[in-house]
Every structure is written in structure tokens, then in C-alpha cells.
Image 1 (cartoon, chains in turn orange, yellow):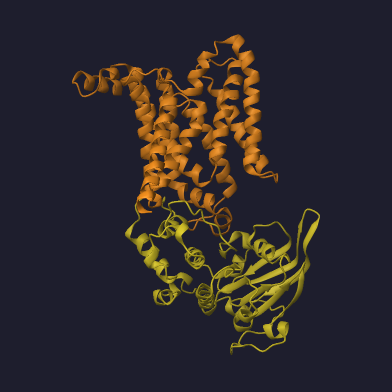
Image 2 (tube, rainbow over the protein chains, first blue to last red):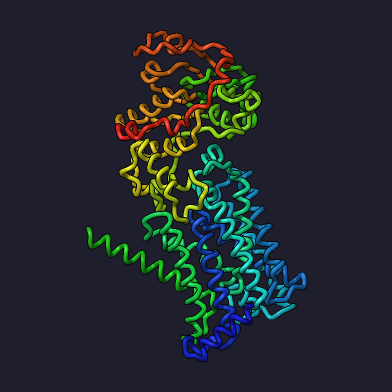
Length: 300
Length: 272
């Protein structure tokens, strides 16, 4: 099916509708990955912002460094240490969440401790990894590279995206209200349904870990957290209501993903796709902050 | 009508600290029960325990007058209406009153278009609490009284006849207090069982059917006259003085009443 899609894209290139760079399959793959990753990260990002878990998602992303090192040391290919990455990110997130519910330590401090531990462990393991592979290969995993996207990756990404969409259709209100007012959601339920706030919390943690893995090819493990945070934070600045907040987050996230993949190629800039995507999102955020400030100055 | 509540050998301990010593208590159906006592006495903890939010010892049983006996169940398994003390809203979130009610009272995902029936239901809820003209106002722009009314709207959608309110008037100005007071009295008029943590003696003497004094356990209980030794301000002596009243068996077969939310009229909301 993906090959068929590429043939269609090639036909559009031949007819002059698309630039020449789309004649290469990896570009089509990267574009599809961006179109799937953008909405996925955007949708989850709204919840990250509402739950004020930006630091948590950043920590899980940074924990990926250790996961990658473990995966490679256990014999996974250096370009795709998916099992190590997913297992470590998930364990890291679940353990952090479990400890949070059993300690009085403030959450940001707890995340800081876990983050420092994960990075330190990753740095220590990288020394051993360097003996096995060229550590520069890791840059692709850490910061994203469109060259490495395969049809299998797209399939995994599509499954995760559509599963997330189905879950969102069923549980979006519960997740939102549990994030906003967990005690009230627990007592009163949402939309006439009982809400298991603890289960939703753990499901959220699982999704963060899954999405970190799913987005690793395009954005890179380290920068996934940034794209979970920046589009939603930007949309929050300009949205009038919840629906607009959600749609704008998806739009910003998807546009940045697509532009971050296409622009470096079109402009022949040697920038990893993850870095380009996050730079674009950050630029948009700063522009909107500045515009808002200018508006305030005008009205003052 | 709302349920009667029975607490048997109820106690609350957190770590080594006994918050509430064991006691028995029955709260009659369809009445306004006021929990009072000094700060830190355990009133809010008692409320949360009844709601199933805090682990406790002993039994909490609800006796529903208008449903079959086999449906009697623990508070943790039914959906009560709950108004917490100083409920927090994320002031910077772009969420309007209508968004909040849509997301909290409907199962259809908040990012999907509302059906006409859902829109009508939301409009009715907002009218009932006098917020219809502020539907598009963001949560961060609401006054304390408007926030409390929003929570009432959310709770009204539950159609519950069992309400637990934790100092719902704290921090509100006089007008907002009167609005909340009016809503509580409407609920009482419609036969709901209300358990409310409150400190205003004037309110207690005016409207409470039963006063429960909590101070590390059950210190005293009874009618306001019995507890405060003062006559009621208004003539509302229909409620019996507090005793260990069993839920009235004769009312068990009562017909199913109209949902609470439908008993609240838009006119009542507009008066707020």
C-alpha cells in the first residue's frame, strides 16, 4: 500500500505537481510519518499541558538515551533499538509515576531526580556502546533522521495513531476532566460514566512511552518531549475555547512536522528533521508571544 | 428523595494519627445535615470518607427510599453530587463555561460537534444556575460565586438526590453566598439529602434540619435548637430532632421522581 502511495506521489512529481525531491521513496515515507506524528503528538500534547506534565514528558524523552544504550548493548541494531527504547521509557515512566503516588516529595523534584539518574546511566552506558558501534549513528535516533524511516515504521506509527484516535473518541472527556479535577472526576464521574483516575494516569504514561518510540525516527527521542509541549503551549496563547485549543494544537504540530521534514531538504540545509521541527515550533511560539506583547503595548 | 446514611463504628486513622474516633450515626433521608466543628476537626475528612475518597474503618451505608432494598449500596458505588471546598480551575486554560459543562457532563468527545440535544441540555443547565449569558466566558475570568454555580451545574447534571458540600460558601461575597444558599434550599425543597460542612451559625439556625458537631469524633448531634439552645429564626420545624432514625420503610416503594436537574427551572436560575 505504501509503495502504491509512493507511485502516486511519483506520478505527481512527473506531472510537475510536486518538487523533484519526492521522487525518492524515503521522502514520501518521511512525509507520511510527519503527517501521522504531528496529530498524534499534538493531541497528546494538549493533555500534557492540561496535566502540567511537560517536565515529565521531557524526562521520558531524555530517558530514551539510556534505553537506546541498553538496546544496543543487548544486541539490537544501532539504528533501531526499539525494544530497549520502549522497555526503558515505559519502566522509567511507570516507576516515576508509582513513586509519585507513594511519596511526599514534590513532583517536579521527583522528576528531576529521575531525569538526572536516567541521563547519568545513559552517559555511563554510552562508553560501552562506543566500543560496539559508531556513536554518531545514535544521533539519528536521538535527534531524528528522515533517511531511516521504513514502511514497517510507518505501519507501527499508523497503528499507534489510529489506536490513540479511537481511545480519544471514547475517553477524551474522562482524561481531560481527570486531569483538571481528579478528585471530582473520581467522585462524580464524567458524562454519566465512572472514571478510574488511576487507570487513566497509567494509560497516559503508557501512551507517552509508546509515542516516544513511535516518533523517534522523525523527531528523535530527545526532542519528542518538546513537540508534546510547544504546539499545545502555543495554541493555548491564542485559543478562545477548548475546541479551538485542540484543533490549533493539531494544526501547529502537524504543520511543524511536515515543514520540518520538507524545508531542510528543499533548502538543502544539513539539519536533522527533529531539530528542524522543534526549531520551527519554538519560532512560532516566540512569534506569538511577541505579537501578544505588541498587542498589549498597543492597548496600554 | 435522597438516601438516608448510616455510619457504623466509623473511624478514620491516617498513619498513627486518629482523625476520627469510632462512632455510629444515622442521617435521615431528604434533610439538610450540617457538619460543624473547629478547623482540623475532621469534617472534610468525614465527607471525603463518605464519598469513598479516603480509606476508613467501619461501614457507610446508603438507604434509598425510592429504589428497591437490594439496590442499597456503599457510597463508593453510586454517583453522588459533590461540591468541594475551593475547587481549583486552571485559570490560563482556554476553556469556557460551556466547554467545561460539555466535557464533564457528556460522553461525546469534547472536540466533536455537539448534537442539538446536547446543546439544549447544556443551555438548560446554564440557565438553571444563572450562567446562560456567560456561556463563552473562560474559567479564569469567573468570580468565586460563578465558579461555585458552575460546579452546581455540573453536579445537577448527575441527577443525584444525594449531595455533599464542603464549605461551598467560603470566600464568597454576600451576594454570591445568597445565590449558593438559594440553590441549596432548592435542592432541599426537592427532597435531596444534603450533607454540608459549614460554619455560619445563622445559616444553620435558619435552614439545617440536623447539626453534627465533629471534633476528633462525634461530639454532639441534634436539631439546631438542641445544639445551640436557641430557637430557629424561620418557621421550619417539620424536620424531626436528630435521633438514630431508621430510613422510613414506607417510602421505599415511592414512585421514581422526576430527575433533580429537571426540577430546577430556568426561572429559578434567572433569579440568581
